[in-house]
Image (cartoon, rainbow, N blue to C red; front, side, top):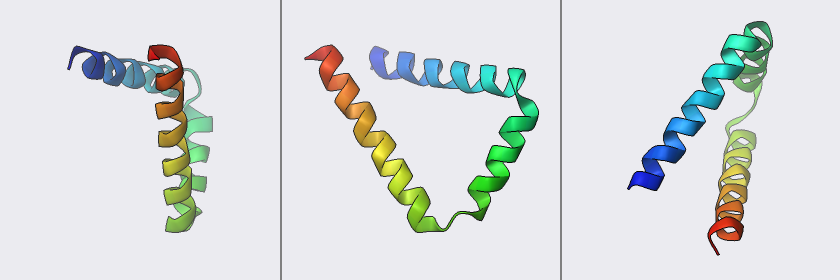
Length: 61
């Protein structure tokens, strides 16, 4: 459970840094995301999740 909380905290920190450093770019990116059909977002989400699990598997063994 500690690893999960650490990972969530890191994700929130990275996202916060991006919004703090590049607020206009993040607004543009979110506007583009809203234009995408659900299938594209679903595919991107599943791909990101699979990549995360793969990296975790590489790191943790």
